[in-house]
Length: 279
Image (cartoon, rainbow, N blue to C red; front, side):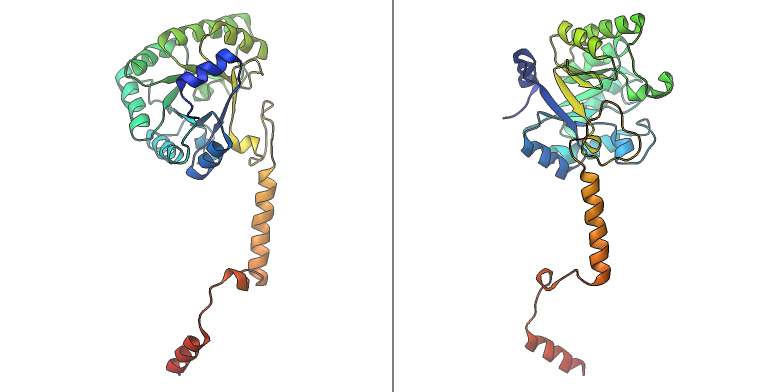
């Protein structure tokens, strides 16, 4: 079944949890779509997991359009959400609408996602007025890493918790169709989820949200080093890949690969004539 703004809203209303994962390429998106994922997010996290940056800030519109287009070609039923990269919507409302339009028109996304609360409501309202669905993003917003002084849990004080609740209500009033809640206490996420009509998608926000999203490299065990507390590894694909690559190297060096079953034959007479001509 095709996933849309309407079907996601119905899932919230019926208590059917929404599933979302990141993807950045055709092959991965196709596999996720075949598994029945509700939504795919082309996150600006691609800056770190695909391009090797330290954070999401260097990601460009060109990067986002390129990867979004690849995902949209692979996924036929998932609701495709594309991140608006840093400084693609903060400069002006007009620029925000224009860049959102590019992600839809050139990238094939169904919705765009941008970070922030009350301060971006004008952009949300204008993008929605251009008939483009907007997913908001509150809490630990990675594009604000420098302002936060790092990747830190948000909303733990009374003042900050109240602001997050107020921001959630404001972005809903501005027209957002859903909101990602990242890196906030689970009980606070429950309160926000109960207050909103639109779906909440959690990442590091507990299971009281209407759905969940994870970076697929994290949940499949492809990343190394520090693993965020909120990540559950559902498979250890990294171990399998390393074993396969190591076996390939060993078999190639030993001559085991390619074996006869991996090669193409030619008639012996042709070879004899070739050798004869060379002689």
